Length: 174
Image 1 (tube, helix red, strand yellow):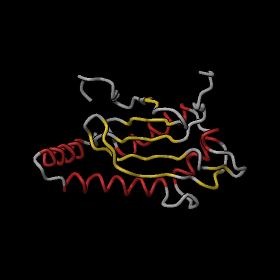
Image 2: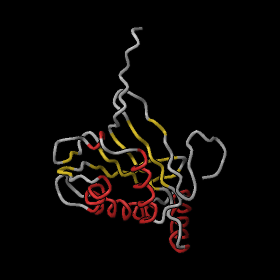
Image 3: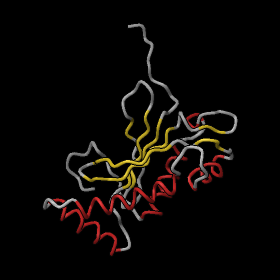
């Protein structure tokens, strides 16, 4: 072994898993009812609820990398740079048994006006701030943040928002 590594210190993506809806209590009750129906075999209510959140995420993140979006404006303000492209992807994932909407920001494909990738600019603390803002917008019980790097396995980096989800925890509650 020659000691070289494929690991890069510049992140490629950051993903935000948006946990179950929290306050107000009526939202949490609607979510819990949808989960109970899904556990009984009827996924339609939960699918519709998650689709609404995914559509809201698309409105926040933008539907194309070049179009103006609230997320692009927020990052420009936070980081003091204008971005020409902000490449994002909205999907649905599963984290610790919960189906959750996921916002992925492709840091290597998102560029400022000088062509600098967002991965060279965005710090973990900026990611935590974004997670906290998303938690506030969606009144989520938790947001779990995952940073990915080229040539490396996923780095699990939880952002505590109300409650912390640790996928390595084999017993505790979410």
